Image (cartoon, rainbow, N blue to C red; front, side, top):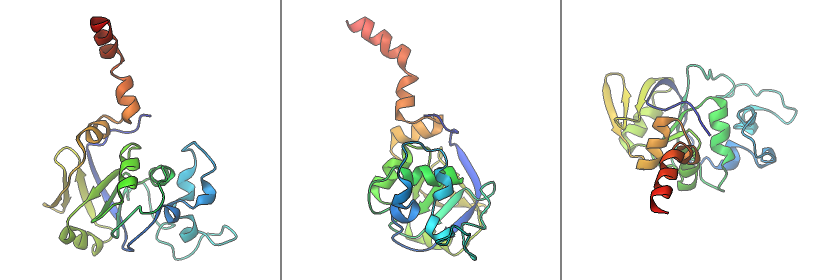
Length: 193
């Protein structure tokens, strides 16, 4: 799968300070009946956004969010815990988010996000606390420099596994990266046959 290459993202933040947001809260299980990403963004945080009749809840953080200006979710610690659910990063990406920042992101969620164009950014406690207390701040997440900048200052450095970083920078998932190497693979196989 191809998606927009991720170099530097400058965006306003949506702050969800709650800890232990699990994948069932991100995308409730009843929406997992598809293997397609299409339309999953409409169901992200569904039970927080809509009542039992499907009417928008007011106030709701996500119903008042503008995906054109707010592409970074700053979340409480232990974000994405719970079951392995590739639909969770699909839904967040489909809703308009390109990055999730927390002090602690569940490993399985992090792996699924990296393979699907969503950058999970783990920052230290000081930077996390600063971001949690400045909702709607404009920040820059630079995947090339591996920094988060608020205003004029870099407030955090983060790490991303090298291959996943390369894929995000090029806007491809791991399979897409391999498919781009088809010529080189064929040449190698011909040479070593």
